[in-house]
Structure formats: structure tokens, C-alpha cells
Length: 143
Image (cartoon, rainbow, N blue to C red; front, side):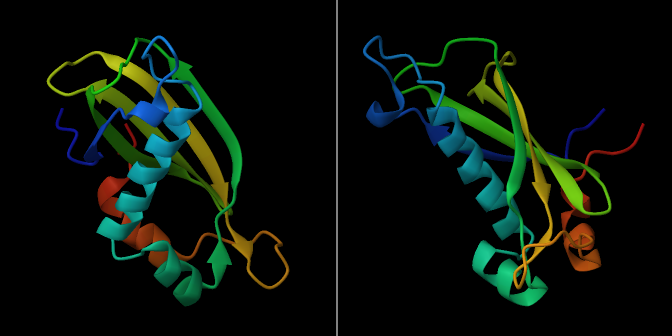
């Protein structure tokens, strides 16, 4: 099965991402996930500034979960795949997979749950149809 619904970027493990043993520090993964998520939204024409202004919502993270499966070290070139699904009425899940370039094994995988809230009063609102439509190419197919 093709996984063309995953959006993938590359990012190198940098000095600030590692501990004294030159192994990526668990908290540094958040930076990698943020970069992948930001580029996914940019790829569908919704950089955060545009999205927040046009759709009049915020997307705060309400849940984060990560499994660390293998070691990544200083200067490793990582591939970060990000995809959406499922999308509910007022929240959506963003999934991440991290691999070393040219290696099939997953180094870490994670997901965030983002809630749609009104910018005016921070109360939950439905996920805008435009956001659903734009993210469709990167939404995991229902099997």
C-alpha cells in the first residue's frame, strides 16, 4: 500500500538536540514534530499566520504521546513523516513517524491531539471545513 498520504521532511540532529552521550534528548523530539507539523500546514497553504487569521481559530495541543524505539545521535539525518487522522468534530489527531534516512525502522512515533477553539473566547468550535478539505491529501485513509 502506498503511503503517499504522509508528508515527509528531513531534519538533522543538531548539537542542541543531544545529551552528553550525543544521543537525542527526548524533549528535542518536540522540536522535530513542530517543524514537521508546521511544514505540513504550509504545504496545504495554511501557514499558521494565514490559518489563524483566515479560519479565526487556534489549535492548541491537548494531548501528546510518544514512543521512543531506537537511538538517534548527533548528525543523524532524520526523516519525519506527518499525517492527519482521525479528524473529529472539534479535534484532530496529527501523527508522526521518525526514521533515520535510508533506514526502515522507526526511531520514534508520536501523536498530538489538537482542539479547535475560537480566538475570541477560547471555547471549542467545529474543525473548519476548509481545514478538513486542505488536509485531505495527508489524511490517513480509513481501512
